[in-house]
Amino acid sequence: MHVIAVLALDGVVAFDLTIPCQVFASARHPDATAAYEVRVCSEPTVITIAGEQQLYQISSRYDLNDARDADTVIVPGTNPDQPPNPRTVRLLRDAAARGARVASICTGAFTLAAAGLLTGRRATTHWQLASQLADTFPDVEVDSSALFVDDGQILTSAGVAAGLDLCLHMVRRDHGAATAADTARAIVMAPQRAGGQAQFIDHRDPIGGDAVDLGPTRQWMLDNLATPLTISDIASHAAMSQRSLSRRFRAQTGTTPQQWLLDQRLQRARELLETTDLPVSRIAQVAGVGSIETLRHHFARHVGTTPSSYRAAFQG
Image (cartoon, rainbow, N blue to C red; front, side):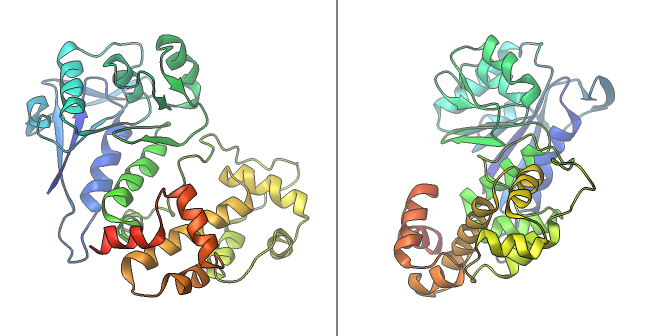
C-alpha cells in the first residue's frame, strides 16, 4: 500500500496538517479498501498554529523516522521565518534521493526550498508570501498565481484550501479521476480545480451591484457537457451579457467559462476511459469534446498522453 507521511513540525498550521490526513484517509479503491496508509510523523513536541495564535499540542504514534520509507512525504505549512532543523532537511533530501514523492502545502514550500528541493524548479506558495519565497530563494521559479504546481517528483500548493486541490490531484494521479471524484464527494468538496487556476479569487461582484452566484449556471454546464455550448449560450442561461459573464465567471472561479468547461469535459473523459469500455470516439462525444482528433489534441496538451494510453495505464 502507498504510504503517505505527513510531517508534523513544530509550529505547523493546524488546517494544513489535517488536509492530507483527511483526503488520503478518505480515498478508497473500488472494492472499498483503503488506497493509502497515512502516517502523521511528528517531532517530539509540536504546537499547532492558526494565524498568529497557538492552538494545541499534539502527539503522534509515529516520529520522523517513520517517514523514511514513505512513498510520499508531505510538508504542511509552518512559520516561513523559522528555518527547518537539520534533521528535517536530511529527511527530505534522503526522501527525494530515494525517489519518494515530496509535496508541500502553503508555506511548507519554504521548508522544501531550504532543503534544496526546489532549486531550479517552478513552485508556488500562499500568494501573500510568494515574493518572500522568491527573495529568500532566488534559484526557485516562484509562480505566485497557481493553485498548485506538479513538477513531477516535487509538488507545491498555494495557501490553505489549495492543499485540498493538490491532494486530490495526487489521488487522481495515483488512482484516476473516478477515485479522485469519489474522494471529493466523501469529503463534501466541489470538483477539484486545475493547478493553473488562479489561487486568489475575489468573490465580490467585479462590476458593482448585487453579487450574482453563477453556481446554477455552472451546474447547468455540467448537466449539458455533451451539448455544444457557446459563450452566448452560457450568457443567456445566466441572463447577462457575454462581457458581464466573463468578468463574473473569472471573479468566482479564477478562469474563463470556456476553459472551465473544457476542464470539466476532460475530467469526464478521464472517468469514462477509466471506468467504461466505450470506444474513444464515443467518449469524445459523450464528454462534449467533439471528435476523437480533438480529444487527442487536448489529452496531449493537458494530460501528456493519448486517450488510449491513458485507458491502458489505468485499466491495466
